[in-house]
Image 1: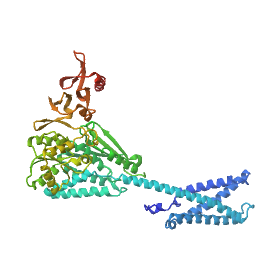
Image 2 (image 1 turned 45 degrees about the vertical axis):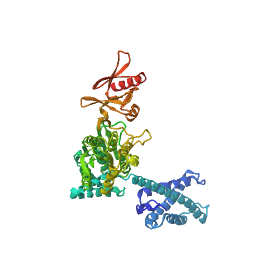
Image 3 (image 1 turned 180 degrees about the vertical axis):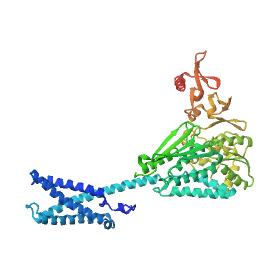
Image 4 (image 1 turned 120 degrees about the vertical axis):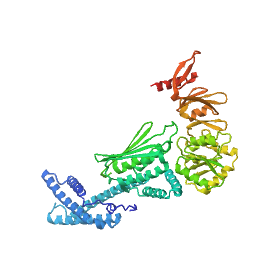
Length: 350
Length: 259
């Protein structure tokens, strides 16, 4: 295997976990289908009574082989995990053939199946069938495993590309604020440096990282602290958070960019500034956050670039993390702009 | 050397002021929070140099520089910005200078030095360069102005675009008719109706070879004694002739506004 994937020991091996009841159940079903096919394909059984007894015998035998194989693979998984997938495949294949061989030998001794085949013929025939079916099954598992890997790595790449970004404008303006404050109010300058550090630590962090709602709202506060210094009287912020589950996990920087947008597109272009409202409420396990800002009078052919990019980014990240439960909704009038995001409190698998 | 600082952030102005205070022969005569204020201040204070932030509300630095360019003897413009974006890149080649925030003292001194040595023609070249030239400029710089400026003596008079009721061209000048806070007025500018029509497309409509009218100010249409159609306007008694070729388009527009 060339994929440098080491996300967890469980996904390294291409074989599914045979200790898992669901996997075991599907193996039993597959085994029964195989028994059915083999019996159906046998021309020597014409009479109905014969046919049923033949099916039960073949089923018994195949289930026996399959279940004991599953057991061995379940127990031996830890050992197989140490091998790379190529060797693990060979080992598993050999194991399956050995189990088939042993089972055939025992079966031949206990019940003398049809008399028209010799001992050796019987063993060889079973081994051939098992060899073909095992190879196909292993191949199937491998293809499935690769497919899952591809999907996962694509999702990871997508998340990476969706890495939350803070506008360079904001970074350099903040640096300028710090430079200005250093002369007159060093203590305040220090605070801004701390706030800025927190924000950028989060921006540079791994995208898969989740933080709690409380941590995200703290980041928002730090961000607003800087903007309030920069814009002074022009920026007013009103918070209203109604009993939100503080520990709800969420992807980092999913709310902060909404505030950044509100300030960039709404407050900064207004000479007198305005108020940003951030409201949160919880409804039936779904958290709603709205950010509302005034809009400057529109010039027909004069709009700021980049509008919507940040929102599209958040929309996609919500979709990746929450599926249909993560939404971003827009509402705009001539003078106001409102964004609402929703996500569940308890995270379900995407 | 008289300098005006224009930046919408108080802390940014404060820093520039203290940096400038450390340089010899520099006097900060005024501070503005947006481009419009900067222009009005420069009317009164006739600075030698204006430090213009690019991103400001009401009127940005690029537009303010463009209006300054209409002056006979404009001040030298130095742009300041937090981050070099496209608008700036398009302009870079012609700038006296532009400074990236946080601004270094040496860079500032150097820029002021350079600006003080420019002659009038060079200063013109700088401010002209921030205006879109023809149609080949990039979209980012080719934006509609928020104000129209007329030169009266050595001063700039600004008319906010939403206040303009119509443009009417005669042989050499364009008359800009406007109403602001209950008062009507007019200024003369040097421009072509064609370029104004392009710049403010969607806001003004051509009704005659010589007239562009603000759609928002159109109130109706009457037929004059001579038998041709004239447009009536909100907030102003003037009536303008509609030429035959524009009649159907104007009718549609009036119907749309009435609906």
